Image (tube, rainbow over all chains, first blue to last red; front, side, top):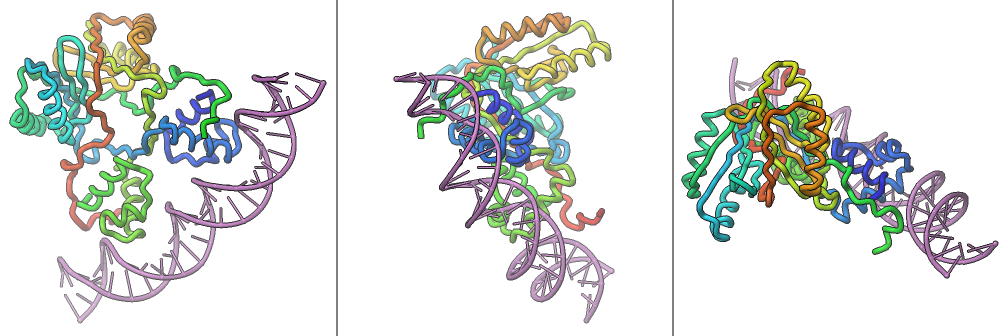
Length: 163
Length: 163
DNA sequence: ATAGGCTATGGATGACATTGATCGTAAAAT
DNA sequence: ATTTTACGATCAATGTCATCCATAGCCTAT
C-alpha cells in the first residue's frame, strides 16, 4: 500500500468502469504495471467486490428508516437468532450492534411509511423485541460507499515478495 | 421493469463483474437481448454507477460511529453550510436530516476512538453544533449496497418505445 | 390474418484484459 | 563501489468480451 495504490483504490471506489489504461494515465503509470497492481489489490483482499448501485427512486424505495432497538435478552442464542432473521429481510441494509443506550441500530429502506409499518409487523412477528424506536429520514444529504483512504497503512516499498 | 429486469438488477447489485453471457444464462435469455436490457437499465438511470467496495479492515477504518446532532439553528443558510462542510469529510459516509428528536444523523468511519476524537475536534471547529451525541458500533452485523427490488413498479410490456 | 414487439442466433469487429519477455533505473544491501 | 532488488516502461501476442448488425421465429392484439 503506497500512494499509487491509494489513488487506484480511490478511483475504483468512485467508478469501477474505468479501464486499466485510464487509471494508469491518471496515476501516472503505464498500463501493465497498473494492471498488475490492481490484480494484487484484489488478490490481497483490498478490493472485496464490484457492485452496481441502483437508483432508489426508480425502484420505489426512497425512504430511509432508522430503527433503534433495546432488548432485555443478551444471550448468544438470542443475538444469533436475531441476526439471522434480520439479515433475511432485504429491506434491512445495515445492522449494527451498538455500545451505549441502544443495543442495535438498523437502517431500513422502504417505499413509504405504510410499507414500513408492514415491514415492522412482519419483523416483530418473527423476533421478540423489547423496545423499538423508529426515526424517519427526511432527506439523505450524503451517502457514499467510498471509504477514506487517508488512514491506510503505508508499507512503503519492498512488499510484493510473497509469491 | 419486469421480472427479468429485476433479476438482472439484483445480480448486478451483488456482483458487477458478471459478464453479459453469465447474466443471460441465469435469467434465461440469450446474450444480445440481455445486453440490450442492461443498456436500457443504464440509460434510463436504474443503474447509477458501478463501484469497487474496499475492505475497511485492510485500509484501517474498522470503526463505525453514529453521530446524532441536535441544533437550534434551523435556517436554510445554516443547513447549506453544514451540509457543505460535512460532505467534505471523507470519514462521513452517510448523513441524513431526520424527523423527530434528532435533527441530523451521520455515520462516520475511522480507525479507532482516538481518531474519532480528532475528527470530532476538526468538525466542531468548522461548524457550530448545539448538541452532539456519539455512539460507537461494536459490530457490524449486516451491510449491503443491494436494495430490495420487491417494490419496483412493474410496467409490464409495451415499454421501450420512447427512443 | 397480420403488423409490431420481443427474443434467438450467428457473425463481424474492435476494445480491453491478460500474460510473458526484455530492458532500464534508482534505491538498498553488501 | 558494486551487486542485488524492486519496480516501471515498452513491445508483443493472445484471448475474452462487449458491441453492433442482420436475419428469423414467436406471440399478441387489432
